[in-house]
Image (tube, rainbow, N blue to C red):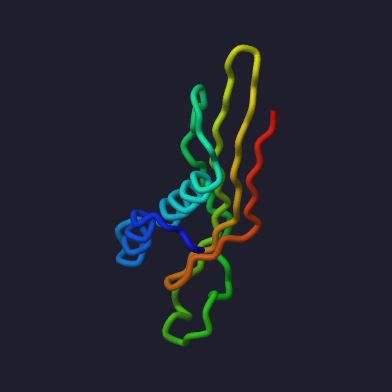
Length: 116
């Protein structure tokens, strides 16, 4: 995950220091990915990101013995924008499964599309 936004890096540091949750971090990651791909214009309404923690992965994402006691959060995240103006309706949407451990953030199954 190569995000140029320094605020996302700050949020990753906040997660590692226990100041925010895995869901809050996943929301920041999907928001950054969405804005990387989305070309905004007038009349777009950008919704807040939605996140759902799916399950706790029984296997950690790393093989380090020190890290084996830490859980891995798996979060389904989505962010979208809607353009509903003068009989034209479009939706731009980004979706991903985001896995967050104490050391790593993985983005799986990322998709971005615009329909309408």
